Image 1 (spheres, rainbow, N blue to C red):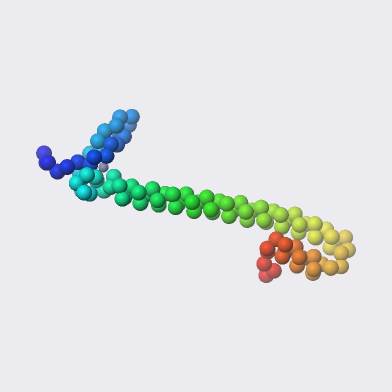
Image 2 (tube, rainbow, N blue to C red; image 1 turned 90 degrees about the vertical axis):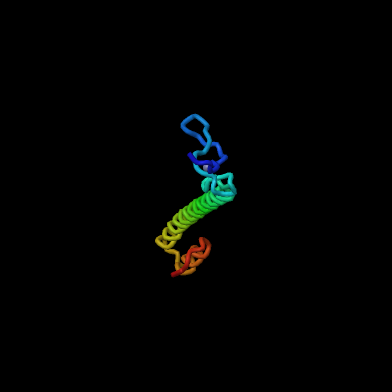
Length: 104
Ligand SMILES: [Zn+2]
């Protein structure tokens, strides 16, 4: 046996709550996993990851909608040209510009 202090945090063991079995190596109160600074840092890292995933999802959705709207207008313009519109260059340029699509 040893008298080294154990971590003060409660943990879950299945459905039961028990004391964390690790030694308290941080401030004589917590193990490295339950060190409040480490807990806070992991929480912040998780939040940042979620924020980035949400932003990436929103950007992907926005891009998908932009491309779909461009597709619809491109078909309209192609039909106009197929039916004899003589300003094909201007139609193409304004459609690309309107949908923020690079010309090259
Ligand atoms: Zn612990």
